[in-house]
Length: 560
Image 1 (spheres, rainbow, N blue to C red):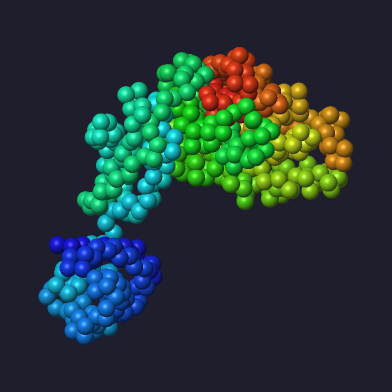
Image 2: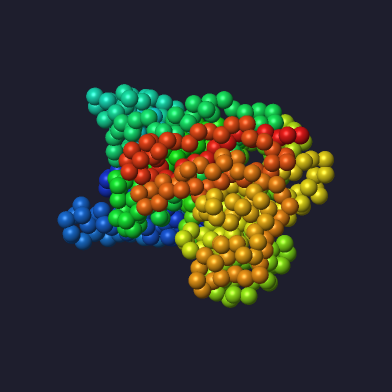
């Protein structure tokens, strides 16, 4: 029996219908899709269906008759089919009243059939279906391959079937199963095909197949991060955990004309595209076996389509917050095998100057140019509270990406201080709710600040005097009579590497993992790439480095 698929979510005022109409005499085979209101009468829907069939049939008849007029009997058979009950809904062998609303059908599809002339259609509600699927343009040996687009309705991806094939000697050969596939050297030069059978509960939807536009290519060879993976082969446990922080370079920045022509002219254009870079980023992150991953410059579509799917199969969960109206922001992932999420929060700094711990400092700033510069930024601070499953410890993880302008050391200093006050307040609230646990802070990010600037001193020395050089970093934005201080003991887990950002125009240390040293200690710092590795292709990004930044990775341990 033919099927008509009805899609309806309870409470919605709309529903969808999908059915295939076939008339072999006229060589008609057409998929119809309708979006209708649940409160319209059944006959209104049927007349819309009839109208579509009429239009299609008349076109086919005119073509078959080579433009001659259609005889009267034939036309009569095309008209008034709803009134003459040739198109109808039937339930338990009784024709349904055409004045009933469509909602009456949607509430109980059992034993209801749609009859179009002599053809019966079984009504199926919310069958799983894949509405759009695509494979990536870039497919490399040794790197994860998965759908670049996977749009579904009523599908549970975890129980759906995925089968991978390669075209070899004009035959499709089965090479793998699952949502992800890692091509091997034997796949080079072959196109790939993915077949998906969508499922949800005990329902199975129609299979769909997609063939890659491109062929499998050889990868870039051994990437420097794979050498770093030698230090992270073992997953940590007990009181130890691993933290990674990484600015992954958003696609909205890497593909601008300025990036191509000025910032990274040494990098091939294909290696600037996220289609290529995300493959390296995912392989790098997965190989660190980190328990906590803090990322900057994360676009929402990369978070949803790439990072979350690829990391969730390793049992990571994550949160993402964009920078106000920008296309990129921050993301934190954590290992659910080791941590439970208690709470998470974020703040757009320019909208939160009333934060009590920061507002005292804010009111001391007299230069209106400074305040306007601070308020003009979309900088965000993320906070997430993670409770260890192995110890009575709670970790508050902060993640941020501060303003980049070279003459804005004073703005960055205020932003870092805001973030610190925000995390301190967040930690106090978590402690009140969990008195039996220790609460410690790890503050990660791209601070856009070198070790000789104020942020490093603020974090590690707890104090910035009013005559500090950073307060005068911009001629029109001097800050006077302002000091900053706090009472949390921080150290930098990776110290001050010579480079965490390396391009032809600039190189230096801008990224940090600050940790509370009266609760935590460093067990291992994953070695950074050598200058020779960084400069091999002039600078970053390159065919083996997916970002202009270098990821930080360190193993920390609770002291208590």
